Amino acid sequence: MTREQVRWIPPIHDMQNTSQFQQLQEHLGDSMLLTNWLREETDNLRTAFLHGSAPSLSSREAVKHHLFERLEERLHTFDRDRLVKIINATGTVLHTNLGRASMSEAAVQKVHRTARYYSNLEYNITTGERGSRHAVLEDLLQITTGAEAAMVVNNNAAAVYFVLKALASEKEVIVSRGQLVEIGGSFRVSSIMEESGARLVEVGTTNKTRRSDYEKALGEETAMLMKVHTSNFTTIGFTEEVPLHELTDIAEENGDVLVYEDLGSGALYDFKKQGIGNEPTVKEALSTGADLVTFSGDKLLGGPQAGIIAGKKKWIDALKKHQLARVLRVDKMTLAALEETLKAYAKGEADQIPSVRMVLESKEEVKSRAWQLLKQLTFSEWRAQIEEDVSKVGGGTMPEVEIPTAVVSVATKEGQAQKVVQKMRTEAEPSIAARMKNGKIWMDLRTVAEEEIAELASALLYWEAYIDGE
Ligand SMILES: *Cc1c(COP(=O)(O)O)cnc(C)c1O
Image (cartoon, rainbow, N blue to C red):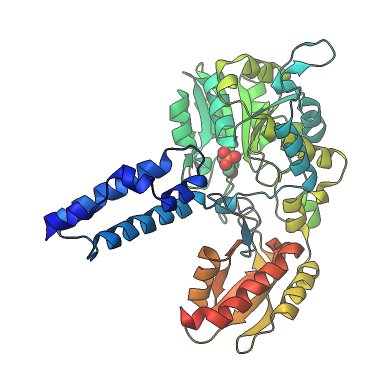
């Protein structure tokens, strides 16, 4: 039986000569992919026949049909979008898994133009000579951070590594034990330090570090006093840490010791003025005397993935000349998006930046979108209502902040909600990220744009009608 079945597998060229194969090939130009898939599938089938694990195929025609089905499936898998749009109904503004900041229309347009055409990325238009990409945005960074100088690298993790490697390798860096944080599971200050070749000198305890701890640890080998913004957790109660201005004092008494703060998020907008969180702005950190600060481009700043290093010209110049500046350099599209994002801050139009706007939006504004969704949810049996909740900023920033918000909750029939949440994620187009709470589907409208409401509604109406048939 088995040998017989193996003989039913058609030769590759016989398959290739069919009109069915040629139709599939039309989707793939002169690519060899389809033929490679066919080889793999016939090999798999042969092995399966010999092991007796093949699907029950009882004729030559059935084998051929099976192979074409497999090819169509593989073409379909190949054709699908890998990076897909998601409607974020979680209410977490800077959701790291969902790509953090969504960018402004101005930023998107600038990326489009810069990607499509040539640009002056490394070209000085005035002199016609070679220019530096590190100079392109420096004036905007000076305006928005108050720094003497600044540069942009791939992300903030790269910025931290770069500063340590270039300015403290083989030397000692003093850090409070209360700030030896891990961020997002893959970034640990102590590990980055080890990679950079800088020697970590831990001082103080988890909850208390005093000025005298730093002073005692200072020595010939000290290159840097480093402060790390404990982005994703807070210590409360019996705590003490040394403020940045005191670190600056200590450094000044000790010659060439650098004071460096990894700000993590790096707010350019003063959220605490609006009563949201207690995040120091980059300007504040620098005006307190930090020689260098680093921060992310796609957290509170609301721009593209990037790491910004800002501070004293002397140190930034040293970094620009370092070999790693080339290794960690950013692409023109990143600079394009960052330019428009920084311009919005420079012009006092931070509310043009989607993630900033989403963090600042009042519960009433969110509620008006919740009403729009509610009106479209003309369920026959499910029940939707507006409820109150809190949104999170996300991205490891301002973990303690809870922004009052409005959600639309949907009570389904018994036991359906979880399934619908999964269907909305896996099968809706665009995909929808919603949560479950109190046994209901829970959608925070803070992170849902007005133009996404109709899509959200039609997905829910669809699943009310069809979930039972699943
Ligand atoms: C988020 C964060 C980083 C890493 O920044 P990325 O831009 O994600 O690379 C480093 N340090 C701190 C304190 C952070 O919060």
